[in-house]
Image 1 (cartoon, rainbow, N blue to C red):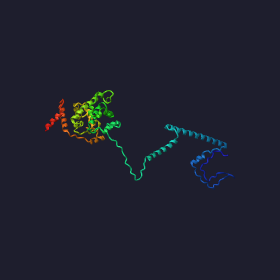
Image 2 (cartoon, one colour; image 1 turned 135 degrees about the vertical axis):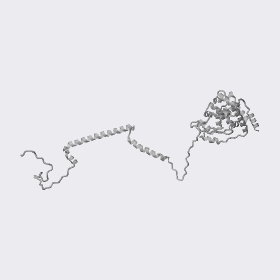
Image 3 (tube, rainbow, N blue to C red; image 1 turned 45 degrees about the vertical axis):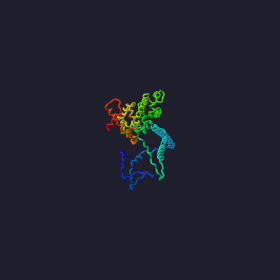
Image 4 (cartoon, rainbow, N blue to C red; image 1 turned 180 degrees about the horizontal axis):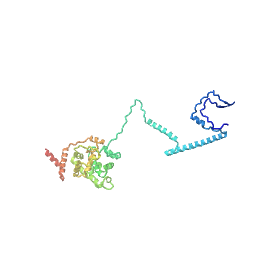
Amino acid sequence: MSTGAPKVRSINVAESEARPILGPGGNKARSSSIPRKHSPKPNKAEEKKSSSPSPAPQSAPSVLRRQELLLRSNFSLNASCSSDASTDSFCSRASTGRIGRPSFTARRRPSSARSDSKVPAKLEKVVPDGASVPPVEISTVKRRCSWVTPNTDPCYVTFHDEEWGVPVHDDKKLFELLVLSGALAELTWPAILSKRHLFREVFMDFDPVLVSQLNEKKIMSPGSPASFLLSETKLRHIIENAHEIVKIIEEFGSFDRYCWSFVSYKPIVSRFRHPRQVPVKTPKADFISKDLVRRGLRVGPTVVYSFMQASGMTNDHLISCYRYDECNAAPTVAESNDQNTINSNHKAEEKIIGSDVVGPVDFELSGTVDRLSFS
């Protein structure tokens, strides 16, 4: 046996070198004459597969036991996953405030969409061919003065639409409006109009002759209908004014002729755009009030101007109100008889008041003097 360093054979062995091969008949040397086929280099994946150790063979009972353990582990894993999924879904629904089956909401959404799609179909109206379609009527709301609101008392709305600003030429009606305008010192227009039937009953439909004959003590007695309307002072003034109006009617022929003579028998047309422009009194109302007071009536300029507005002697409807044009188009009665005499009387009175002359003046005499001077 030879000693020494072992010989290491190189991987790259020449093809001509003889290699021992174990065969069924014994060891034999491969003939160098047989050419060797080049084997392709294995891939890295194949090398890893070949390098990994093959599992050792196991017995049948161990294999069955291992499969049983795997089945149990899979079952427990699925159960835990399902419980986690149910917990997560419950938490997500609880966070949004919707706890319930998601299938319910999924079923409701299509139903709401269907109901929405059916609404336009119900509103549609089938019109046959050739049929005439009537025009759509658009309800137009009448525009009134701004102090008439939707919450205004209906009786005052009716008064605004039918009476306020309409020219009046009836003596009883004028006397009624003068009395109601004087009542504004204690009541409002809605309150006065709601008791209008009581005013007419107590004051004999505002006949100046009958009112002048009323007994003051009977009218102002406690418990009488008139005592529930106005104060005793106002009731006494109404009766006293009726006495003086009877005298005016005897002098001028009618209370209408006397009142309208101050505005030349034509309404004063105002052009107010805003309620703040409407005055409480005017110089014309102040002048009429002074003439009435001189004749014995108890009326101030504010009452006179309210009377002028209600009787149509002045049109104070706002220009945006639909009644503005209607009141302007209302016919007026032009009084021509004795118009020059009345105008001359009023002119003479204006001159005397302007010159600060105090004392009773005979205006009929002044009118006669003016006519004589013109002749």
